[in-house]
Image 1 (cartoon, rainbow, N blue to C red):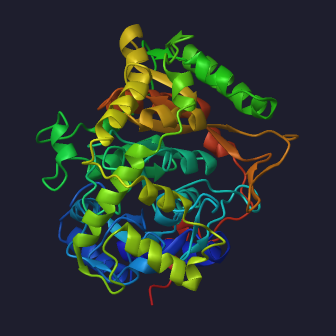
Image 2: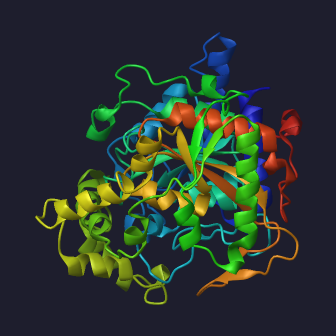
Image 3: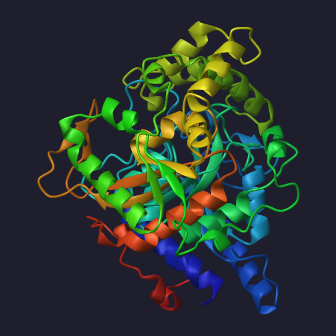
Length: 499
């Protein structure tokens, strides 16, 4: 199939559904030329890599040095231009992928408001997920989740600080890989936290996610965290770890206290699906270690401190803004971004407040302040010895598993990897739940549920083995319904106009 025809088919699919779901904010105006050039390369026997010619949508906080916006959904950064591609965008181009466009997101990656909705941004509007009408897409990689679910590109990229790939991945019935912090470069990605931010794929299969991760992983001199990776010259071949017997012989822990401390009757279908998933793991040859509990979990969930994220955001945002080549609204730090947001009507302030920023500015520290380090060490304890790393090391585990929504928070604070894989959907008869204050549907019959695999840093190969084996045994994604789907099929691509 001609790459140009494939690209045209994906654009047509976007046109058919995006006015409803608002997952994509922009199609790359250069995509046609890029597709033609890649077609010519292929005709001349040149293939840049396994992603050659495949269209990928990226979240609108990942900078591209082209005609597209990188504004995190905010008018404060409209027409602000970086001096170069982000490291991630450069890797995609080198791999032969077509950056098809940018996806909508929870504005500022869900780091502005205490009362906004998942998937809303001032520039992009409200993302709606595709499994039930008015569905909450979760966030912050909301548009990437919905776009990948509906096949608006071969794959999408999201970013995660705490749950922003895995949670919207779960709600859209996807595979989402939140890599170890440092496996993928954050250079010229609009930040929240240098200690927690990471970039990863959101796809319909584990194998697709592994293929994309292969293309974007690796060291980058602009991001010192990537230099800590144990892969100096070549990252693992993640696709080779997609093994049917990937669960055989694995030791997998269940932090039962996490389940117990979060239980209420409304979660009963979620917990039932999880127990069924554990039986699948056991039947596939895994040893299940129950009551592999997080020793600091109760303290963790009672600790309201946001010091690390607040301090990192103040420092990281100013650093990102200082690297812009053009900055039309002259915003150079959080105070100036906040002031712009309060003055610009389309930002919907104060209806959607800036409480997160207000609190960060009131705290008045950055990540070089003396108050920062003890707080960061506390987070390392919660996720390390008192959390996922400690329980894995004490029990000689390969991973721990939890329902995705319960799994990612502890891994987030220590920078550990998470993979979410579909495990089912809420059954008929499930009471509908709405997420306040905007009343999007968060729980209802047909909303997907995910199983989260959590591991030690750099354990992506083993997690992919387990996730792939679980996916192949369950094929849960194939059971999901949608209330909206594109009409154009990729097998019809040869008949789609490229004019």
